[in-house]
Every structure is written in structure tokens, then in C-alpha cells.
Length: 214
Length: 97
Image 1 (spheres, one colour):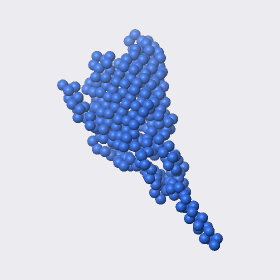
Image 2 (tube, one colour):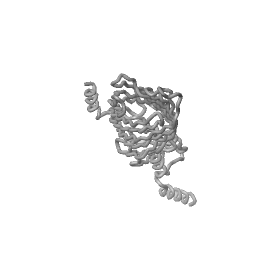
Image 3 (cartoon, each protein chain N blue to C red):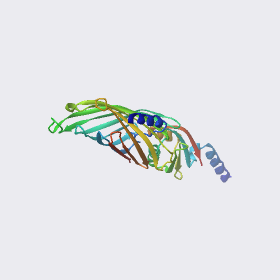
Image 4 (cartoon, each protein chain N blue to C red):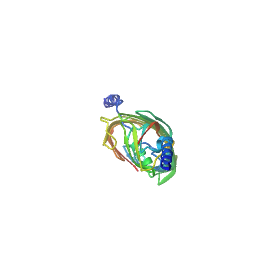
């Protein structure tokens, strides 16, 4: 029943969902992102030499497997469509580094780790839609695939510099999980260089993301 | 006679100058300007240019207004390059004195 309600909300929100922070900034821009949900906590700091790629550091902690990742991440803007009232992007996101875990049979073990995935988004000032996927290979700690989609709507359209508000719904799909779908309604606030997202999933897990761009 | 010659030369110079040589304000209509991060990108990129006094961004009209310092200017090709290198597209450049 809850899923049905969530899908109904999603259907309504298809007109109005907001977007995720972009993985590539303007030339010379530095972005700090921290993302926290029921599965993981992450910190990603990247620098964009041009508007078409960024290089950065990624740290992730996966709660259930108690796995820590330290990686170099590269994000490439493969294609951008600039329209009069909207913008769409296609990105390739990849990382390579090390994974560490002390969980279960692991005893302070570490191994090489990598991931790669595609991210796409379309947004106007009123609506937002995005999709991303990621294949993870954490060496001896296993490999898995995951994907995520988002829709958003801005209840009002603010001018540049105003506080912008978005109502969003994120759906995460982890096929190997016993409960593969997670629905997270959230609210996004965006002002100046700061972006904050807060929500709670259908499992009762808190989502909190913060992005600042310099 | 000498003064007349100078005025004639000045007149010819003024009339033959490219339009951008006189414009202090340039309005650039840009495709893809949909959020504050896009607007900030324009402010950062143009703010670094010595010729620019200040800029403002209107997300409703998708117009970036660039005010030049006295005696300074940028040609259309350079403005277009800055915007294209930032990941956006120029639709139109309008100049005002």
C-alpha cells in the first residue's frame, strides 16, 4: 500500500521534481558534496579544470558491510543539451582506489576497488528528472550494481539569489538486496552556493545531503 | 583648416569603428541557464576578466548583462568562447552604449 501511494506521488511529481548537484562545475570551480542515506555516507570533493570534466577525492562508508572506500574520482560531461528553457546532461562517472573492511570474516582487509556508471539529467526551472547507475567492484568485498532515479518539482520559481525550494522523490534500486527498492521523498533548499537536501525513506532512514560550490 | 582636418579624421574613425568598440554594456542571451549554479558560473567566468566592471544574470530572460570598464571591451568571438567553454550556448549578443 505504501508503495502504491509512493508511486502515485511519483506520478503526480513527474511534473515537478528538482535536480541533483552536477558532478562537473565551471572552469576552476571546486565543489564539496556530502551525501548520507540509509546505505552509505560519502564525501566527494572535486575540481573542474574545464566545464567538461572534474577530478576529485571520494570517501565512502557502506554501513551494512562496514566497508570504507578511498578513491580518486573522475567525472566526464559526455554531452550537454542547452535549450531555451531547459538543460540536459549525460555524464560518465568513474573511480578507482582502495576498499577496507573489518566486518565478519574480514580482518582489517583491504583490496583494490573501482566503479563506473552513467548519470543523466534534465531540468528546467520548474521540473527535474535524473537517472544514474553504477557498477561497483570492491575486490574481495564483492561487486554489485545499483541504479537510482529522481523526479522533482519547484513549487515556486525564485529569482537568482533567492531561496529555491524543490520537492523531490528519489527511487533507489539495488537488485541484489532483499528489499531492492527504496523510496525517499525529500525537500531541497538551494541558496547562493549552498544546497541542502533532507528526507526520509520508506524504511525510516534519514537522507541528508549538503553541497557547496566555490 | 587644420582643425577641420582633425574633425574629419575623427569622424571617419568613429564611423568606421566596429560596434563593440563603443559598447559599455553587452547583453548576452544564453541557452541552458536554468539554475543559480549556472548563473554563478557566468559571474565567476566573467568576473575574472579585466575588462569587466560587473555582470548581472536574469534567469527569467536568460540574459547575462556585462558592464565593461571605461575604455575596455570584448569582441563577440571572445564572449562566445567564454560562454561556450563554460558549457553553455550563445543565442544572441546585443550591445548598448
